[in-house]
Image 1: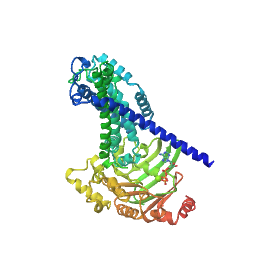
Image 2: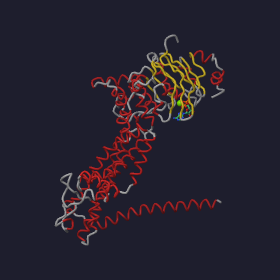
Image 3: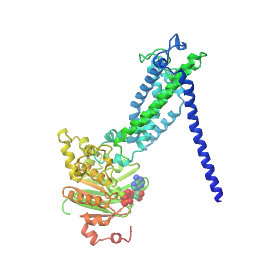
Image 4: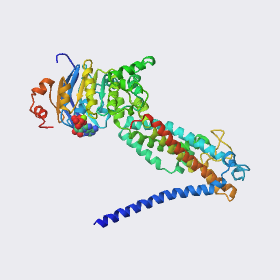
Length: 283
Length: 253
Ligand SMILES: Nc1ncnc2c1ncn2[C@@H]1O[C@H](COP(=O)(O)OP(=O)(O)OP(=O)(O)O)[C@@H](O)[C@H]1O
Ligand SMILES: [Mg+2]
């Protein structure tokens, strides 16, 4: 009996170690591949120049078009999604509570979260056809915002739910309205959670290829108008890796590396920022 | 008692989902002085208290019937502005919850949302109410530091200052010393004793000795029903009801 329990304990420890190795190992493998293939092709020119020599198959130049394009797309989409989802999240928490309507909205958000991004792309494309908008920065922003909306709403909803109800009650008991309580207490208390939600959404947005495929198009130029096509890093990887030219493929690896670095930097900044913002938060 | 009650509860019943927490409670709370609400755990003390500033309705599935009159007007009447009710009836909860901001901003939270705080009298307001809650000397040098950095006892006094800053006529206290050490509890008791001269205090407590020390009137609840209410002297020394007597003797509860 005693030996059996020891064996059980041993086996369990082994399994936990194994899963840890698998998780960390695959992360290392991905990062390693990106570095190994991307680092040699990463140069100053790659980061500061747009591709030269005819459409995106030219061999000279860099990926600045895709870097700036992706930042504009994901930045714009995150801003738009944030503006739309903040009222929804506040409504869910302070006004709807656990009513049927709130339940339905949460369910809808979960379903939306699970929808593949190519479907968002197609959806946004249909709308663009209706309103006569061609593949453009604006189109891409709309598609990505749809993709990011459920992520931000659910993330904020969870952040609000972690707040003890006694804190809102303390505000209500002083004669505050729901709106005052939401804007002056809840937003402040949930800042770290809100920031995490926003950055999660930004990361998903900047890394997504399928939803910008039809909606944002691709170009060698830097973005200069909301109504013109823009390049993006995921599509830079997708198009350029598919060409038979090693010099063009190199740009794909560099783009992949840059994308990874952007997302990693963001999560580090987010952590630092949320610690700063937690100054007044009640724990 | 003589004059008109400040708060009068009439036929109040409260259900959480299917479970009834208060059963047809009718009781009057006289103006000024401290009324202690006592009774065993789960008898509905908190429920009664939260019905009086309409905080009950913020928590999930609650059904309320009956009336609660504040100076003769029903606070559950359809046209009543609930924020005004909550401004006139303050609350001191059992566990202090400072708002996520500085000590200074905590005190001004109420005055600011009610537009009572002018730029030139803000400092004076903060000082006045921190003094009223006997906290000024301890925090005068760190008014801008986060409120949650205070000790629990100090936090509770900050919550009192915050409640007083909107100038309520009634102060509801739900076991305000439950989370505190004896010295901090003593200070809160002293403050309440001082405040009762110009406000009506309703104090929920499960500490009978605290009720004896502070109360002018006593309300005894038992399983959601009102058993006895009257002047402290009479209820403690000469209770009319058998159950009150047994509870005070420590036989039930
Ligand atoms: N939010 C709630 N949901 C469901 N039932 C509740 C809720 N709050 C209280 N109750 C129930 O209502 C009854 C009265 O609760 P209440 O909190 O008023 O008691 P209390 O006298 O304050 O007790 P204590 O001395 O332990 O604080 C209890 O049976 C309790 O289980
Ligand atoms: Mg209670």
